[in-house]
Image (cartoon, rainbow, N blue to C red; front, side, top):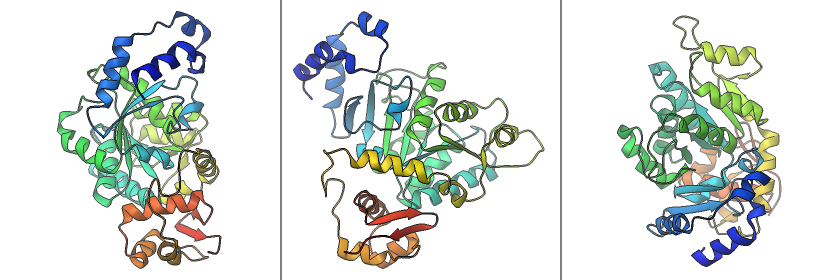
Length: 338
């Protein structure tokens, strides 16, 4: 995308932007800002600008009433193609809450889901780290500009996420951590995801904003129950009373996401720019031979194929898109003969 192409789109195709008529009429093109954004994109191969009309723009995010018109992204932009689960919760999480978030993120990642969160302390960080440690994909949506690491102690996590997933922000790269931006970014966390899991939250937890937005967006909401003492799980219990699905294992989540996962994969499959082999090579003879016509766990596929779990998950997604296998609770089932 060069400057002339972007300017022509803004000048002549502005009605394709997800804005109200009043905003469209008052829209003024700031070419200096456009040039600055494109200059940022060209600074690194890991820098990406994904506009609303871009084929890589997440289809679920487009369903929001106020989707971001552009996403600043650092890392592996193809991670946006995977079906995603949001995992959120308390910044001051208990050791047990951190363990549960880590375990569920690892299990869901092993089943082929990316894990989306906000890179905050506590539950967010544990969910991201599970993916980093076990070769899974993870999406970190920031409430700051994409070049601002917040909190600072997550600097290494910020770097690691870019190797196996991506950092995402709708704010300009140099925007600092203003309080009002964090609730705004929560709609992107829930909007990118098929469902939102709250692991540990008191009644005033900001993670409940994400859960409420997920409900408004028609997505699934899950919650992990906990002790009635101390009030650290009151927010989760309130969600359960309001109809959230009680979660004890990854299987509780997957069985509720079948229809939305199918929609996501169908939408991705219609993107004609995604050519066979663009995400990864497809060694049907070796990988398909690892998947049976009954439920085969991802661990069994990895062991039989001899490939890394990261590569297996990417290739299994492509095999799903082509109709060779179907993701089911506990792993994959082969549905077509070679």
